[in-house]
Image: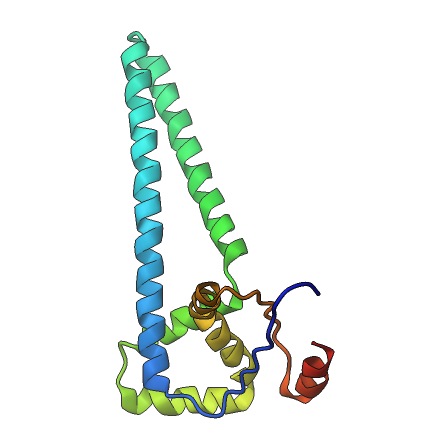
Amino acid sequence: RVGAYFVLGINVKSINWINLIEHSHKEVIDRNQRNAAEELEKNEKLISQKQRKSLVLPNKDSDAEEEEKEIKAMDKMKGRIHDIIQNAKSTTVSDVVAVVLAQMYYLNWIFVIPICAIAYRCGLRSIVDRYILNSVTNDIFQYVEKKGMEMNLRIVDSIDQASFMLNA
């Protein structure tokens, strides 16, 4: 390796579920707002293109217009189906965990905290730990960029942690 690097070891010992749920809720809302803004921008471009085309095209008879409307409706439906498939393909486990935690924001804490603690202890530990790491990665990158260092993040189970750190 060339240049400065460091090893970041994170060991989750306890979780403040209320803070994690609030953070996930804010993160999901921010992501939805960004997606809505991108969709709005995309729709505005399509509308402006359609307006330019409508100024250029001469009037057609009613049968041709109906066929054109049907073709446009089919294209629109294909586009929606394509968007749904692309969203499903790009959805990660971290996205699912974020959405589930964000929805728990609207439930009473008395019910949410035990559900989260039981799920965490009964097999979702590694998934939640990875989600926590992924959700703070941007903050870590910004800190590292500010300090001017290079970084190679890799998630390693605690069993392999010592050998991983020795290899670095």
